[in-house]
Length: 158
Image 1 (spheres, one colour):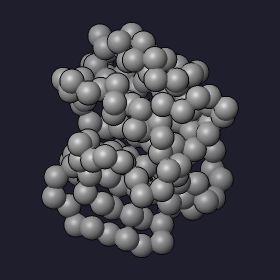
Image 2 (cartoon, one colour):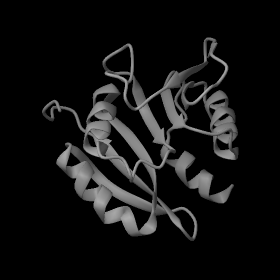
Image 3 (tube, one colour):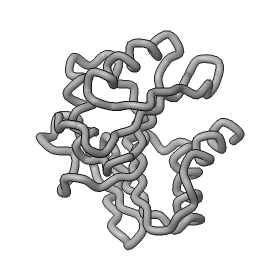
Image 4 (cartoon, one colour):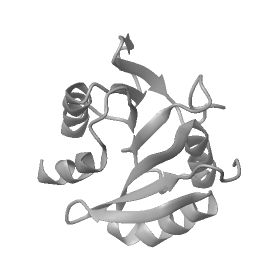
């Protein structure tokens, strides 16, 4: 729980925010993120790989998701914070995925990517190449870091 708290400390407790998570399993992090979102009165958008019950309530939206989708959202810019909790390091289109994520984030929105420790520098370079700024990482556990990047206002579209 301590490691998740570090991530939640980055998110200001302002109501009305949109938080998204792309995930492929019902793990503890998703449940903690649901609780946190409810506590700060944010809307949580769950993009689930694989079969999942579709839920569409006022503050929780669960939809099935695929990286191959032409667009990652029905709206062009939507998320203040986006957690990518799926290992994409073996994909050949990682740069395309990062560009599509960039397009659905609000200006000054944060992207959190869970990566293996040895891949941090690779993701820093990749994110910098796709216009993310303020790159940083948090030591999450013995094998994993969370790479954090920000979409800045006024930067060119990707």
